[in-house]
Structures are given as structure tokens and as C-alpha cells.
Image (tube, rainbow, N blue to C red; front, side, top):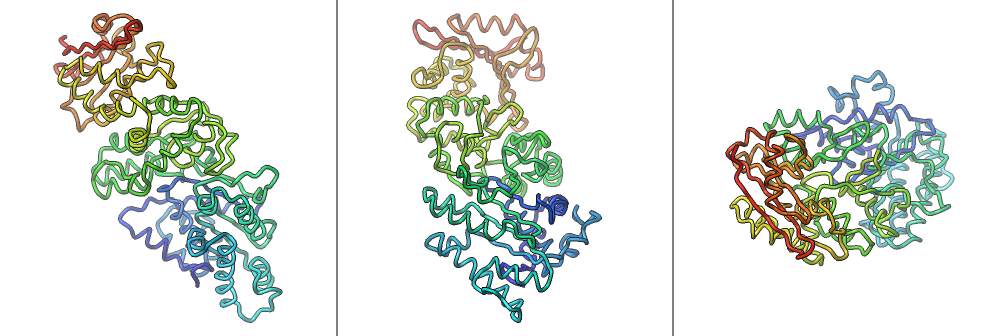
Length: 523
């Protein structure tokens, strides 16, 4: 057994012995189904914190000839498969974490040389007595060994895209790396499975198609592997029951990634930390600071800031993902920026409607942190002060509320501020802090119509008043209050009788002033 050649499966053992392990061994059913076929090349791209390395270690433990799959996988989903024994521990498995090699090297050339030397050291140590054509050539040595022992290979590569993240602008280094991977794996009949995982899909270089043999499964198109992207609703429900956590609250914070086959996908690392520590909070920023996001949303593309603010306010934004070149530097439009943010986990993607959105409260907090320290004028100030604006509503101080909304009002270089829809964005941003306490609904059915905005307290904040907000454009706040009453918008909020506030906001386009009225609801 070795570090790179036929690892012993102890990395997977460490995973399953942890306090929380969610069984994702069903992924092996898929990889078994494509072994030794044209579909046996898989590139899996996921954001950080989404279990990429865990999956890679799982595959190594299952296929490696020096592991003990029957013991390690006993009781897990894959052990029930009729094919379990057929493929378990049957392959000469090479496991490579590219980041490890890159961190010990000064450039890509050195990295490739170190990788080949390291793997060859173990291969030749395992098979010292064979006749080799070139003991310095990894691909040729693998072939020579296969011709002697007839044991096919499984190659597993973790952090495959680290070169594109570390050498973002060095095209020569990137192409050299892609050519190395192609020469190692393409058209090699002795390789029955190649599995690569990283954050980015395979880099596009026009006609340069070094790795065109790979099927790609990404955050945009996970295909049949959608249920292995993160935790599913049922998996999280079981964890919530075991750890006595509120599923609704956990869903608000960590759900939001959605695919046609799996409508609810949760951020795995955040859910695990939430369960272990018994606390719902932002665990995203423990592995990456908001500055990583800030770099991209501060890029100077027309409409980029407008759309980011719309998504912070809860809207979706159309996107074209087709022009993205799968790197972290080539941005020609805001679509390229948003596509990268999908792969990084900062945006969810609706494949059916071709639009993006901020997936959950945890990620939304990162946007607020980024915008708050960016030079976005009054909107940055408004987001910082949103807690004060919410407090002013609770304390029934309408003048301060109107001032808070005014700070969030953006006419130049931002959304066109010319109707109630734009006003609703402004109010949503001015009251961003309300999302910490409320479930926010737009156009909620109630009585004889639809209330513009309704804020329903979350279970743990049941002492907070429910809010029904009606918006008017160039009319009057008093008229908005009367509309709430006349159309009986509060009818669906009977349980909040006695703890329900009516909030009316009007914008006068002549004076360019916001007016606010607040009343306690009396039936």
C-alpha cells in the first residue's frame, strides 16, 4: 500500500467514524455502472464545503486493492448492491491531491515532475522486477505494469483545478497541465475509471480540447449525480430529529440549491456544524472570507450591482451560462461573473428558468458583508443601518423608518426607481435585517387581494410582531393603510392578533420623499 498507489482506505475510515456521517455511498453504484466504458471519465465540480474530498476518499477506499471495502462499507447503501463484491478492491488505484503537489512546487513544471516521481516511486516499489521501457515516464510505466498483471487502473484526482486557481493568468502553465492530464489518461484502455473533482469545470480553450473525454457534472448541470451534490431534505430532516434542531430554521439558513431531480440541496459542512454545535449561524465564513465574493461583485459591468441588489432583496436574475470559459479571470459580461459564483456556491441556479438567486440566509449574509464594505454609496449605509430601521418599525417611529428607506433609495446607476416594484426592492433592502427574525413573503394572498410584503416571525422569534407592508407610488401612506384594512390583508394572520403592525410606505415622485405610517392592527 502507498500514499498515492493503492491507499489503505484509512481516510474514509476517519470519515465514517466521525460524529456525523451521511451515507453517500450510492454514488459508487453510478461509478460502477460506467467502469470500462466511454462514460468512465467523470469531472465533478462543487463549491468548497460540499464534500468533494470525502467523495474522492470514498472511491479510493472502495476500489483500492489495499483497502478493506467489505469492512469499511458494511451497513452502508452500496453494500446492498448486487455489484458490490464485483468491483470492491479490484483495481490498482492511483489517488492524487493536486494541491499537495502544487504547494511543494514553484511552478507547474516542477509540480508535474514531483507528481510523476512520487507515483513512480510507489509503482516501482510494488513491481520492482518487471522490464520497463522508461522508468521516468508515468503513463508508459502504468502500461507496462498492466501488460504484466492485467489489473486495470482507477485514477482519482482531488483539487484537479488548483492550477487554474493558483496560476489564474498563466495560460502556458494551464495548457501544460491539461496536456499532462490528457497524456496520462486519454485513450488508455487500462484505465477503467477516471474521477476528477474540484471547484471549476474543465477549462475551455477554443479548439484546445485536451480533456474532451470527460463527462462533467457541475452546479449548473449535476445530471444523475444531483443527490450527491450536498445533503438532501430527507437527510437533513433525519439529522434535525436526532439533534433536536428546528428543520424550518435549518432550511432557511442552509438550503436553497435546487435541481430538477432534487429540489432541496443543503450546504453539507454548515449543516454538520449546526448539528454538532447545536447552533444555527454562519459557518460559511469559517473557511472563506467575504472578500472572495467582494472581488467579483465589485467588477464594473453594466447592471451587475443592480442585479446583486435585486437578489439581496429576494429576486431572481436571468443568466446565460454558455459563454463562461471555466476560469476565474475571463469575464466579458456579468453573466460570466454570475456563472462563476454558481460554481463557487454563492448563487443558486434555476435550470428550467435560466436564472440565478442567492440560495439561503447564510450566503446572503456574505453578500451583505461584501456590499457593506464596498463603495456602493448610500446603499452600503442603508444595509448597515437596516437593524435600526427595523427597530424603528417595532417602536412605531415612522419618520425614522422613512429615513432608512430613503438611504436605500437608489436612482442613479442602480435600478430604475419608477414604480412600486422598484420601491419593494428598496424596502426589502432597507429592512434586510428583518430576515434574521422573519420569513418574508411578497404578494402574499390575504382577504380580498395580495399584500405587497408580509413578514411572519420565525418560531424562535414568536414574540416579534407580524408585519403587513403596503407600498404606494405617488399616492399616500394613509391610502395604503386603508387598503390593508379594506381588503382584509390580515385575514391570514389571525394567530398574530394583538401583535400585528400595519406599515404603509408611499413615495412622492415630485418631492422625492418617502412617507411612512405605522398602526397596530385592531380587528
